[in-house]
Image (cartoon, rainbow over all chains, first blue to last red; front, side, top):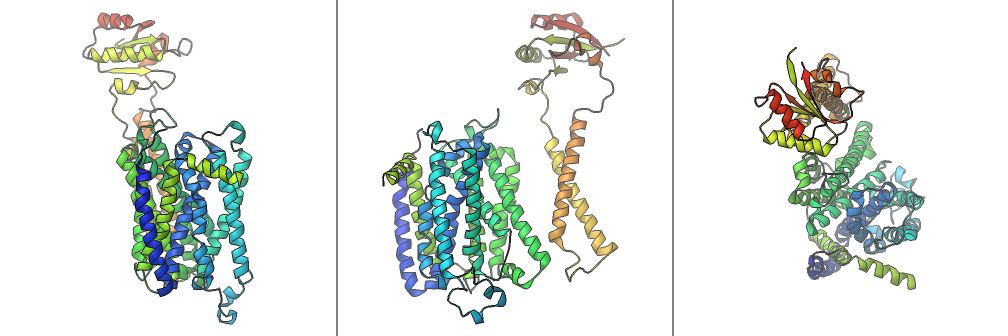
Length: 379
Length: 175
């Protein structure tokens, strides 16, 4: 299949941006390590969400089938193949956990009672061990999923329903650990049993929106035949993204509703923190971008059938997803309010540029995924 | 007995589509088609207007949501104000859930009623069932009905035109 040559042309600028970002982050680590790591962790969580979400979509499609997934498969595979880069982004944070997590290196006597009881789970060796196990599970899973969904794969290497189902179970457990360890434990007093599913739903939205943008940018997706007669593929994919987005909306609203109704100090604090000092503007913006605008746009058929409509929708949802991750992670990491500091921008440029370069490299020529995979087999 | 129109039976959907297109080109406007399953493109050929059902569903959804939200507001603010755990009387987060469900119910009801109305149902009498070829025993074909009220309708001429278009049977329909 012929693709446009633009991704390779973009790799030089993205690498340049990444290099500049890395340089600035290096400076930032000396000047203000706390702020730099805060920005870095936010970006890393945002970027790791893409391969994890893409893996969910690929596995769900492996179980259910359907034409929409066949179209999304090439970009999703390229996103899944970037998983090692996404995991590597966490290494800088692992070296200085004490600057990010309040339960690291603190005097237990100074911690609140609720957090002190959690120290059996929240301690550095166990934390790092859990991260390594999850990373290993994901790498194996990504490896398998990329192999199962290979376009040139013969029947024997195709994924089975059992494989996909077990993969989803394992992924669900690992994603729960990720959400609790790296997002919730920044505010160790807050608990929310819905949060891991919320994070997984957000990851799916992000991965699907990115895949839609990439597909629409490189090919005329709205003219490809869809699942039914008279329905274009772009419309099918847009409807799937609509469903994923509604899932995220539902879970977000349910967490808010339960915490609001309970009105317990250690829970509502999570929202109080995110509802003032400028974070409320980010909240309104993300509600507009990830719910209100796409909700009405997805209802209009002509938008789903036009090239620019699909491109715009994907971009709006993607921007909303980014703001959502920032809004969930960043407020608890900064004492000051919602202001853009240069370490944030440097981290975004560095980590984002590196990830984008990797993604474009794999997306421009999908056979590179298979080549990397085979080299790994030979050792 | 007055005449409702003339009905022609065709063997396959392509013949029906072709006949409908030709008759439309000849200037017939008051036509209807019947088939055991959906024939693509037939609605456009017969000049049927685009369905307005989505607007009815949207209106039903909005009406349902607003009505129920207003009902909740009335009951908590005016009819029976109760302080629950110090929360404001107008506690919109939980009300949203009920209003949303009512909006879905309103949309579904509007869709159901609107579908019936758009199809002209319930209708207890339709002249087309007077045609012998349209009965259960001989049915299952693809039919084109030309109403006698059509300005182009001429009894013998219309009949011959339909026969020439490959109709298996052509039959007058009494009103």
